[in-house]
Every structure is written in structure tokens, then in C-alpha cells.
Image (cartoon, rainbow, N blue to C red; front, top):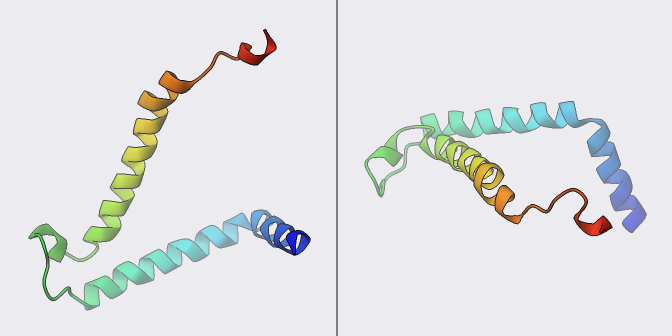
Length: 85
């Protein structure tokens, strides 16, 4: 079971360009469907626009990465020779 899962992950890692294209196509289809199917009762005024939640997720994800890299990582990082002393 573990070897099969490992082979699957290796197969996916070797073909990362294909997977990236597949994920972007799926994302585009979902945003396209959001243009055709409008939410019936938007909670806020801005979330009635097509593609809002996709854009919101992208911006939130990027903000988390930037905050973790620029603010949190320097606070918790150790010096390069910390464990060799």
C-alpha cells in the first residue's frame, strides 16, 4: 500500500506541468460556471460579483504566504549552525 502510494506521488511529481495545467483549467471552469450561475442571496454586496470567491481565495493565500515568510519565519528561525554547537 505504501509503495503504491509512493509510486503515485512520484508519478505526479514527474508530471507536474500536466497537473498544473489541469488545476488551472479546473479553476477556470469553476470561475466560468460562477459567471453563469449567480448566487441567490449574497451575504455581502461584493460577493455577488462573478469570480469574487476565487479572487478572495487567491489574495488570502498570497497574504498568508507573505506574512509567514516576512514576519513569522524570522521570529522562529534558528541560525544555520544552531544544532552543530
